[in-house]
Amino acid sequence: MAYAHPLLQVAAWLLGLYALALAWPRVASLHLGQSRRFNRRRHQITGLAALGLMLLGTLGGALLGRLYLGAWLSSGAHAWGGLLVLALGLWGLGSGLWLANRPQPRRLLPLLHGLGNLLLLILALLQARSGRALLLTLAGGGQ
Image (cartoon, rainbow, N blue to C red; front, side, top):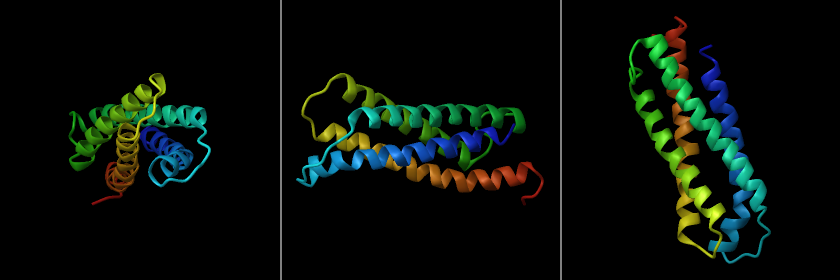
C-alpha cells in the first residue's frame, strides 16, 4: 500500500510534463512573439488530470504518513514539501479553471499559472528524492 502514493505521483508528474509540452506553443505566442497553434482543450484535460492526480497523491501521502508514522506531518521535510505541493497544486488548478472558464486575452495570469506549475514539477522531483529515502527507511533498508 505504501507504493500507491509514489506511483500516483509519478503518473501525475508524467502527465504534468505532457501538459507543459502542450503549453509551450502558448508561451511562444504570448511571450516570444512566435505564431504557434495551441491545443487548449488537450492542455486543459491533461493539466486537470495531472493536477488532480497530484493532489490525490498528496492526500494519499498524508494519510500514509499518519498510518505508518502515527502522526500528521511527521515525515519531516517530505511532509512540509507536501504542503507546498498542495498549495501549488491548488493554485494551478484554480488558476487553470479561471483561465478556462473566463477566456479573454491575457498575459500575466497565464504566465503565473505556468510558472507555478513548473515550480510544482520541480518540487515534485525534490519530493521524489526525499520520498525515496523515507520509503527505504520505512521498508527497513534506510538509515
